Amino acid sequence: MQANINYIKTNWLLILLAIILTLGVVFRWANIDKKVYWHDESYTTIRTTGYQAKEIADTIFQNRLLSTTELEKFQQLKPESNIFDTIQSLAQEDPQHPPLYFIISRYWEKIFGFSPASSRSLAIVFSLISLPFIYYLSLELFTSKLTAVLAVILLALSPVDIIFSQMSRQYSLLVLLTIISQLMLLKCLKKRTLVNWSLYTLSNTLGLYTHLFFILNLFAQAVFILWYLVMKPERKNNLIFFLLSGLTMIILYIPWLQVFLTNSQRAFNSTSWAAVNYLDWVLFGKLWLLTFTCPFSDSDFGFNNIFTYIYRLIFLILTIYAFERVYRYNNPIVFTFLITSTLVPFLALVIPDLILTTTRSTVTRYLIATFPTIYITVAFFLSQLLNQGKFSGKIILTFLLTASIISNFNNALSETSWAKVPSYWNGEVARKINAVPNAIIISDEGNDWTNLGDLLSLNYRLNADVQYFLTTTNPDTDKLKEVLEIPQANLFLFRPSNRLLLALDQLDVRRDDFYPQGQLSQVKK
Image (cartoon, rainbow, N blue to C red; front, side, top):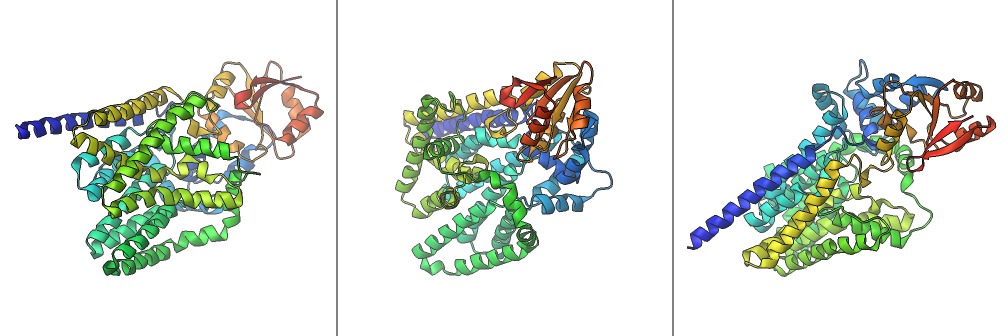
């Protein structure tokens, strides 16, 4: 009788896993060619194609009319470029972004083509590869297949993981390497072999070459190791291996570390957007709540609607309670590993924010690598309830899966998402411009010098007959006047700098708000 019950439970779990994995794959691939190719993705294309942003800017912002075809050539592989052009582009302009993902992406797109869909497909592949690794990480922590399967289910349907897997950025690879690193650390502590420590060192080195903030994962592991040695002083040899591994990582990372230190000012300038005049604690609280609940749901009723936060608070309470259940599991090593992996990276961003008045701890993509341990923790909590035959376990699991499916369904139907700022409205901007004949977009590099990414983003969606007039830093008013006098032209102003606005004012033109959300206005003489 008991065997039959276990058989039914196993079948039920396998059927659920198959359904969820199918949904996870479908949601990841759904409409990836229709999603807005946002600002940061445009810079991925710049790097992988072998161009430099300055090179493109110096070519297009020249007070002259341009066609969409002329911009399109910068979205294809640069002739006679090679992998070193990609590395040099990053080293000179984006040293805070190590080159591994961009190198892989370059080769991937040389095979499958330089398009938004093919570029994004690489991130989807990395996201799917994460699923078996979170299974083995969960199994290593709890030796429970039910917990491991539930962790896979939660990651497979995670709205935030799906959103970032549909972006041509390195975040899916970052999550994958974080999970592998954590898995290998546990294996090293369990069985100290040269192979395990070598694989651990390799995964960490690859992580460092994927994203600068992979170091947050290493901070968490260092805190865990120190605690582990306090609890188990007889395992002090692990500290020696951990330090040797760290030293090897540093040596292997020296080439890019030197690049970063040499161009550190460029990196700081590129991330200066994170600085604010003062810390708005209410805003921080809202963003932190949204960040730590988006692994299960990113649905909302509006950013300033109290019901958004009441709804999302349910997921935070559930997560906190799940950690409390792990604490009561009476395995301090497992609890400490999970809590340090989740909180240390967060605190490593919060503390500098408090000191420097910056906002990096509110940026979800910077914390995405902390979410796997949240999935595992909640999976353990659910497995306990289900193993005990409690109906509440099925209710909570159903609630989580329903919330995730609703979020993913809405995301599948939408061309944009909250993660695509500042390009959130670009899809609608392109539609409004395409609806008008003889459209000319007037723009420049913008007040914050970031318009290049969004102009390339728009270019994927604009009709072939749309033209650009892109001005230099100091606009040529004579040439600008010539464009304004083109007969039957419909002139649009897209995210102009104060310099461009001043030049237009000198020409006595009228600006009518056409689509304020997308910073698009219509210019009339």
